[in-house]
Length: 140
Image 1 (cartoon, rainbow, N blue to C red):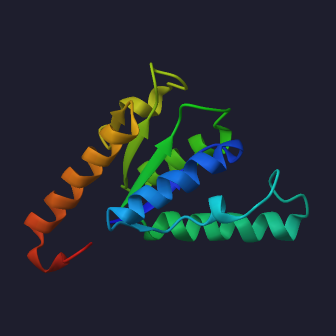
Image 2 (cartoon, one colour; image 1 turned 120 degrees about the vertical axis):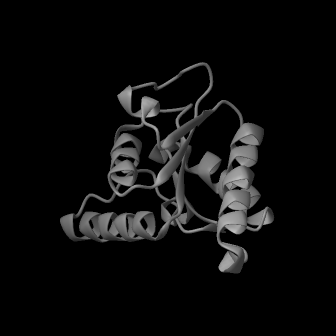
């Protein structure tokens, strides 16, 4: 399955760990923002525009968004979730104890999880549904 990982920029290390785990489970991680070593969003307008274009392109290509909502202030993450829902993408919303809850977590396209293992299980169920529904989907 093709996955975009959304998380606060300050939690890039968590997103990198999640990406490694998802790749080990044979998922394709499309998001690249967490692979860039930086302390904040680009300041120069052209660089910001380039990063935004990359993020939106990766979101558009994803089958599902994994939103790591347990740490930090997820301002841009909330925007990515809203964008994904508007595009009809499924979202796996990982948050401990209801942290960073908002109206979007009630959307029918959103599945809430509390731990990395619950998130992995949810993604496996989604992948199995894709494989069962579309037998030619292979490792989609």
